[in-house]
Amino acid sequence: MKHKVFLVDDHSLFRNGLKLLLNSSGKAEVVAEASNGQEFLNIIKNFTNTIVFMDIEMPVKDGIEATVEALNKYPNLKIIALTMFGEHEYYLKMIEAGVKGFLLKNSEIDEVIDSLDTVAKGDSCFSKELLLSLVKNIHSKSQKYTDSLLSDREIEILSLISKGFSNQEISEKLFISKRTVDKHRSNIIEKTGSKNTASLVMYAIKNGIINI
Image (cartoon, rainbow, N blue to C red; front, side, top):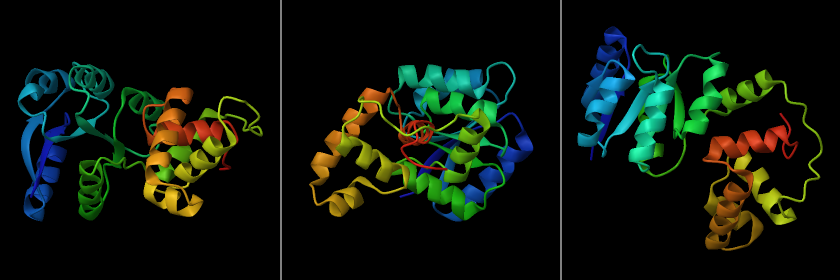
């Protein structure tokens, strides 16, 4: 079954190019397009079953505002941010807005399809390179984590999440059930005020739970 995709970008040349690649892949189909965040918001109600590729810098309404407003109305909507490497000031805002991942605009088509496959399964597709670049740019000094906010087990699980292990892999590694890992993960997200995997990784790095 093909992924249904909604493209939001103010550059028609880029949209047309990505649309051609996706439609030619046989694995995805672009069913809607918008040239800015407001156009997207005007019609998203008809396309809530799509995966959205959202540009960040756009006229009228940018991708950050559009993402926040869309997810407030449709919290299950899957949005992947389109970005250029180095746009640090926007990464954190998009993570906080609730995007499911980042995709560099110069990515190969295989990477684009992989991101769709990953998000469609309910997972996040955040490049560790982008996350580490963001955290380094914040200039946070990592200290040894001594806060009692998280239990030892939660710190252990957060460390493994940050290293890219899935809940199933963590359960096998720690010899506990996946359901237990799911519960711990939910508790960690609630305690740290995180929204997604990217937020958790950033929390872990900034608090010295893992090292850059």
